[in-house]
Image (cartoon, rainbow, N blue to C red):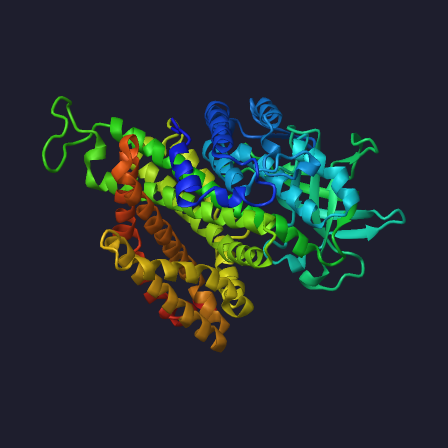
Length: 596
């Protein structure tokens, strides 16, 4: 059985203690954002995800989606759950009040997303894609298109997708062939086929709004000739209702390893009516507004699954009786000790815990920057926040999903054979987690984005948004004896990251393959240092609060112990990663192709 209780205490720690929620509340539109309001939202989200979504997770995986003659039905209970989700206002949380949204900040929205991903990842993909479509349209569509589509996306009666991938092109979108032919009335006729379209067809909403990448007849070759179009399943009527069926057909759904209750569709566009979003041949720029949002959300999928894996493993480890403690029986009243007494089980549990809490803290930092980038009026603060989120997006996507997959595997290992069979639902977590390392740009692509685009951007300006605060933190805390055991390992790992950065920058000038060969290890190193920084800051807060903590003493003490575990048992991976990075591409690229 999958075990989950929303980690509200730790979420509050991130919101109010690690990052001051008043920072976001002071921004335009945040005037009513009180801790009381935030707490009530998180508590209601916890109730909904625990009581409605979690019970549907295993059954949805078992049943999957059903396809017949272009129609997709979601598993039993999903439609009722979506109606309750929509009526509860969850689709409108972080949307503009001008279109019916609640105007809540992303730092709150991301915590709710985490709960949804932890309890029912398949369900979360439907509203998650809709929010991405909302962002793309809000930032790039004409006012007419915004008025036509955004209110319906915000209230959840319509849903959204993004249609990029074609059978012959995934990451290399310059190869796409879907065509868009202009019409006299200003619309376009879109023709082509797309695959791997999450939520491309389903029975949860009355309409589905597809954002489709396509080429104009006179478009230049490659990515410079891609435009973005909004193509609804049903054409909107003048009064905002649902009109005639458009030329969009679901021709099949994929039979997948995981996320089986999420409909992954093949779509055929046959002269479908659509409207251009943004400027001609600038569609990729507009779509990346959606893709970057989705990449951060996919990172939260890894975090959510790490949390439910951790909680499930802890529950099992406290109940499962096997063997005796190496130092003598801990429970002589029982025929054996619970497996939580064994060091190797503790290693797995502590690793999962350190991953989940560290990633939640880092997600909070990035989410706060998202809000500053969106709401700040000071150009300097806005630019800093935009730079930081651009830098951290590939790291959050890749690192969180890799750690989430590691956590689900550790959970299965803790369960032993009982994790490998279907009864407990643990093998579902492993299967669901695996896709997050692939979609929205594989983790290898995220690593290339980091070293190829983000590192050299603006002469290293993006990097400085991370390096400067970490460097300042280390310098100002080194003399503090209470933090020395945490700051010193962070300082050494940060030094390894700095050396790796210089090495990649210099070697890439001579040979770009050198950067590509180091990319995956560099992203992992960067991510571990970022988590180390979060753990050092978390420990500092916990140490300050502990003396007067009273009933919260156990929480703060656990923070300090977990921080120490991360620094001693996980962060040292940094030095092996640096060695690998400095070894270069030679052994990787030397073997002739024919020898494989």
